[in-house]
Structures are given as structure tokens and as C-alpha cells.
Image 1: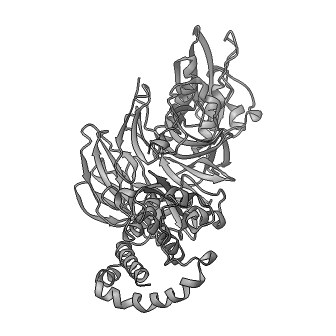
Image 2: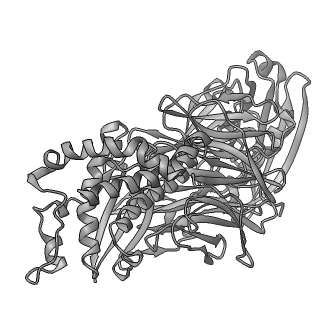
Image 3: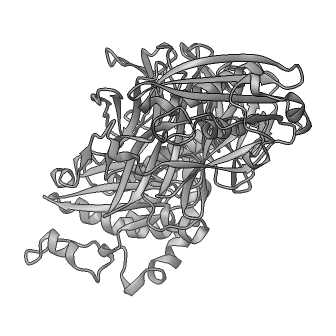
Amino acid sequence: MKQFFQYLIISLLWLSSASVQAALTIEITSGAEAALPIAVVPFDTSKLPGKLSVDIASIVTSDLNRSGVLKVLESKSLPSQPYYSNQVRYAQWKAAGQEYLVVGRIFEKSSGQYDIQFQLLDVLKQKQLIGYSLPAKKRNLRASAHEISDLIYEKITGTRGAFNTRIAYIRAQQDKGRKYILQVADTDGFNAQTVLESDQPLMSPSWSPDGQSLAYVSFENNRPEIFIQHLATARRIKISGFKGVNSAPDWSPDGKNLALVLSKDGSSDVYIMNTATKRLTRLTRHRGIDTEPVWIDKGKRIIFTSDRSGSPQLYEIDIKGGKPRRLTFEGRYNSAASISPDGRNIAMVHGERGEYKIAQLERETGNLTVLTDSTLDESPSFSPNGKMVLYASTRGDNGVLYVVSVDGRSKHRLSDQTGDVREPVWGPYKRKQ
Amino acid sequence: MNHKITLKIALLVLTGIFASACQTTQTEDILVDPATDGQGQTDGSIAGQDGSTDSSTLDGGSDPNLIPITDDAMSAQEMLDQMDTPLANRIVYFDFDSAKISDESLDLLELHGNFVASNGDVSLRLEGHTDERGSREYNISLGDRRAQSVRRVFLLLGASTDQLDTVSYGEEQAALPGHEEAAWSKNRRVELIYNVN
């Protein structure tokens, strides 16, 4: 075994500023027809001593467009550039076909300390819907822009926004040999930070419910093993390194247990591990492949993939055990379940005639809706507000990430210049500071 | 010849039990019963297949019934270093979503299995791989299942458990890039990685 270790190079680069080189950028692939028209005027920065590195209005514009619910007026079509509500001539915006208008301005209170003010206006009622002043440090300006997007989105749609959250994914790179990088980024793909880098495969990131840690699979010892890593401190432990497969970790809603897959007792089966005591409970017992467990119904049940019927399909089992119940019947291949936050919908990889797309199953009715139209889609993951699904697809020789609205009407690509990106997982809401 | 038939039957029974896990209970009843299994599909058809495959399908005129043995003049390492023998061929391939070992692969695995069984200082790491289709997690388990199938063949041929190590890389380490069957068929594989202690 020793000879394998010499190849191992693992570096922990969390919060390393040098790792931002590989930013993702957004490209709109299709917009929704029925989206609500909104104009976002560039914020006034004329009171600032220097130029700001971050364009708040363009971040908000990109966020709102990505939602599929709102459609932002192109900046070249703006009839005027007001910064305060009392500068707005509503008739002008009504004539431009807009229902909502966002204006704002940025001040520097002290060095590196900003105050961002914005107002969301209703063009038809000619009044302010919301207006806030947000204090922001220089390094948090992007997060503040996403917070503004969240506030606008929630006021208009009534649903909490999920722009100011994080995504995790694996990037594979060819650079003096193959490299695998676990990264965390903003939901628009910017502000990417490396959590772990290895010359052996990394897989299956899973967020802890508090957003503080990731569980993942690393092949650093030349076999798949499960690790847990605290993001802020980079402290990591190997939680599962049994003989055979150790894979597919998924954190329980209370953060105390991991569902995972082990083949130490023969074939791949689903187990539950208490992360504090490492005590294992075996949940499934079958000679087929049982994998990809995800918690549902506040931790009472688990949905998993099994090929016990001859091809991979989704099943549901009580965590106390019992007989699994099959959930999917359409299509030869259904796997990789992700559960909507309200527990009503399951996103999955749906394979039919050799094509793999993302589909959504409504639990109550059993209705299956196909959301995507390419052929090698995988790893769906719901946004914390349940309105979007993040997933991976293939474009040329590279893996790329997409976001699709749950009605399937709007799809956006998080494009990437430097490599092959896969296995995205959407993190939970940030805790209020 | 006798030995070969036994191996194939043993494998059929094993894969049968395994397949039963994935198929209907009807199949399970048939395959788990050893009596039915023996006289059912296996006896006649296998013998027939054997007769035709033995002499014709192997490259270079090698007879799979000839078991390579280590002589005093050549160490296991030296035998493995020879690039012009069937032992230099160390990859077996699989059908989509399958861990079933083909007759052709079985011939190759017999050569390796006998070699491992007769060389106690040799150990083998069996690395299971899949093509890119389907989910990555499922593919890790599928690669594991493939490596386990190969391991069972080696155990039947007399290799000991501590000579054999299995690991699955799923779809993470493709042998060939590309998104079509030409690449996929080369990526669905188990690689035999030798180590001489």
C-alpha cells in the first residue's frame, strides 16, 4: 500500500485569496416568457472617493434574471438614471413597460466600510415597496448585493430569496497531472474558495444543516473514504473508512447523523452513522446496489436509489427499518434524489433511451415532470427556497453547472473557463448574524 | 476441461444468485436451487461452448487450460514483466450497467487466477470502473460490484483472500475521454494491478 501514498498531495487552501482565479460566470440560456418586468438602475457611486470593484446593480440584475420570475430591463433601454425615489418620473417607467423599479446609492462611512441604500418602487402604484440601508465591508459587497436581491425577490414573490447562499461543487483540472478541487462559491458562481485539493478523486459533497461543514468522499488513500471538514477552521476528520465502498454521505436535518453507503458487508447498502459516537445502524439489506440516501420528512424517512427491481429506481424507507416502498415507475433509470425543502417534490436523474435528464416527481400525485432537455444531466440539488434546481451537465468535454427553475421555464448556465465542474450542492440559508 | 466446466457452473450459480437479487422472485427460485441450476441451462450448453471456444478464441494459440507456473529460473515478477504473454493483458470489460463476466473475460481471468493461486508472493488490486452514464454514486457501487465479480473468480481458482484487494473508482477515472459507446465500452472495466511482495 505504501507506494500509493507517495503520490498523495493534499493541501488545505480554505480562504486562500489566490484561489479565486477560477470564477464561474453566468450565461443565460433561456428566459421565462411570463416573467415580471423590473428595471434596476445602476447605483450612484459618485460620492465615493475611488472606484468600486463590485457593481451592485449588475449583480442584482443577474440574480433576478436567474430566478426566472423576474425579467430585468437591459441597461441600454433605461429611460433615465434616478438614484432616489424623489427623482423618479413614474410615467417614463410605465411607458417603458416596467412594473417595478430599483434605485440606490453607495456611501463610504469610513475606510473600507460602506453604506448601501436601495429602494424598490411600484411603478403602477407610484410608491415605495421597501427601502433599506445596508452596512457592508469591502470584502462583503457581493454578499450585500445578493442580500438586496433576496429582499426584492421576497417582496415581489412572497417567497424567501436564496441568492445570498453558497454552493459547493467539485472541479477537475488537468494541470501537471489531474487535480480534483472541492470549492465553495456564491450562487452566481463568483467568490469561489477552495476547500480541498487532491490529485486523487473527490466526490459527493454534502452540506451540514448549519452550513458550517461539508462531508465528502476522498480517494486520497486510494480508496473511497468519507471525511467531514469544518469550513472556517479547515479541521477535518475521516468519519468512515471501511473496507469497500464508503460513499454518498447525506447529513440528517438535526445535524447529528450521516446517511451513507457501505459495502463492507457484501453489496452496497444504506447505513446511518452518528457523527459523534460513530455508531452505525444498517438500514437496507439487499444484494442489489442501494445508494444515494437522502433524508426526508424531518428525518423520519430516507429516499434512496436501488437496482433491486433490475434497474436503478427510487425507494423510500422508514429510518426505523421495514420494507422499502418504490416511488418511481416511469423510465428505466431514476437516481440521485434531491428533496425540496417542503418535502413535496423530489428532483432526480431520469434516464430513458440512453438520455439522462433532470426530472421532478410530485410525491403526493406521483406526477413526473422532465425539467431539462440535454442528454447527460446529473446531480440535481434544490435551492433552500425550493424554487430552483442546480445540476451538472456536459458541454463538449467539460462538466458545467446549470440552474433551472422548478417550472422548467428558465435555465441558466454557470459557465467556467478552466475545467470540468460537477456534483453541485446548494447550501442552506445563512444564519442571521 | 473438467475444471473449466466447474468454474463456469460455479460462476453461473453465483451470478444467478446475484442476478436474482435484481430480478423477479421467479428467477430467484430457479437459480437458487442447485439441482435445477445444474441440469437446467448449464450442463449441455456450456460443454458445447467450451469445445468451440477453447482452441479458437484465444490469441497466440494459448490454451487456457495450460496453467502458467513459476519455474526456478523465473520469478513471478519476471513473468509479469514479460509483455508478450497473455498475462500482460490486465483489463476485463463489461456491458452497460452489468457486472457479468463474459466468456472471453473468463478465459483471461483464468490465466491470471491460476497465476495468482500458484504464486503466494503475488497480490492483486482489482480496480472497478464504469462509464460516465448515470449518477456518480451509483457508479461507485457498480464499479465495486464489478471488482467483486472478478474477485469471486479468483477465489474460486484458489487465490486467497489476503492476496486480493478491491476498490471502485466509479466513473471518476475514465480510460478514454469522449461521450459515445467507443469510449464508454473501454471505460466499463476492471483493471488488475499486480504487486509482488
